[in-house]
Image 1: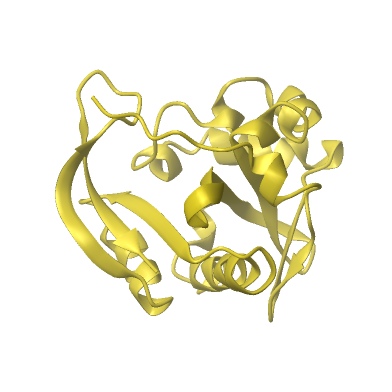
Image 2 (image 1 turned 90 degrees about the vertical axis):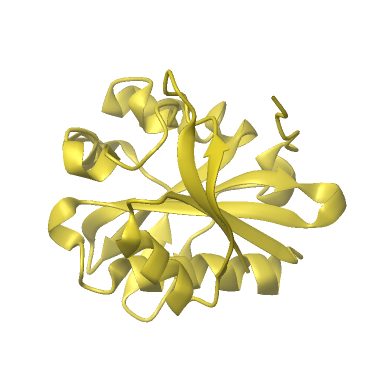
Length: 183
């Protein structure tokens, strides 16, 4: 099995930024966000299409936030997604590869925030940051083939489906069948 080498995310983001969209702010989580993070992590529907090894699932919510921008920044950068100071979910940058100017993106929203355009705007803000301010030229994403809604969000942001129904290691006992997207 091939495992992609990733560079330290701290090389791409020296510190966790605050990113602004039209209606959203993506910002670092703080301890007062722990209850919102806990609520997100308890929603089974949110995690049905996601890997098992997500940072926010490793520890209790307040400990996640305490560790997130120290040890978590090695592999990924996770920001909270907020609309009018209301927590909506998480945005994640991961799999940074400096030599080829590549990074991957993902997001997860509270179930009650689905279908409101929040994922589309979140992804747009992330793409803009990577292309405009971070020198990234290749942006990828992966979705389980059953996750049609995330596929539509990626398409709305100009991503193309480049590989359908391929095996990936998402931390489950068996390989996950996923679609690979490219911008």
